[in-house]
Image (cartoon, rainbow, N blue to C red; front, side, top):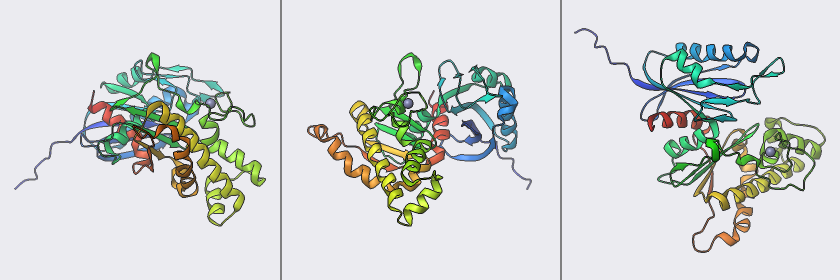
Length: 314
Ligand SMILES: [Zn+2]
């Protein structure tokens, strides 16, 4: 008997475009990542180089029938218009790339339907679909890494800001009196100004006398360094403040944490869980708004799975 030729699987070609890396993956209709590749973005090559990289990565994946293409990207961007809005990560020779019509260029390169979504929005969709949160339809996903990404689903629907934009909830102030370290957005005391890795390092550096990398800080904390442990506990308290603000606005049943910090959750999450019931005391009668707070099991896959979910549920 000859070899039977299996029909090629039908997949969504999904991308996760971060500040420094581009990841491409084939994802099945059941939400399985069938193959994936990652490559550094060469900023010197500019926008044409980025489009080439999208095409090149697709060629490194095995053969499949690609139904459509879906991109989760760091913002700011406009999903409906398919453009990146002068993204802070992308500049060549100190010149910003400006407004980038990413979807139009990818459609031309691939001759397939293409979607674009904010990575934090994609991450929360990925969590709803594959995060193991049962039938919960009210979810906040917080990515705690170099920056802070926040995506929100209420009543089973992705929450958008007006004008078709993504909500910028990480710039909600939680302590505007603190003028020590301005947020990247120019304001003071934003959620991101406390919970982003870069800001955490600065604050902890001022306390311990030198700036530490994330892994160094975790190691010192695990060795019992009291000042570093205090910095993580303070992080946990600010996280509770942030979740309180998000909870009174969006009433999530679950808040899911991912990103680099979530791996060190034992150093700050107990503090968050201790503080949160007090911060929400007035919101616990009738419908108890206290959300479950947990670490994501999808981690870096949430965004790319969310991109697939969008393509499959259009
Ligand atoms: Zn800000």
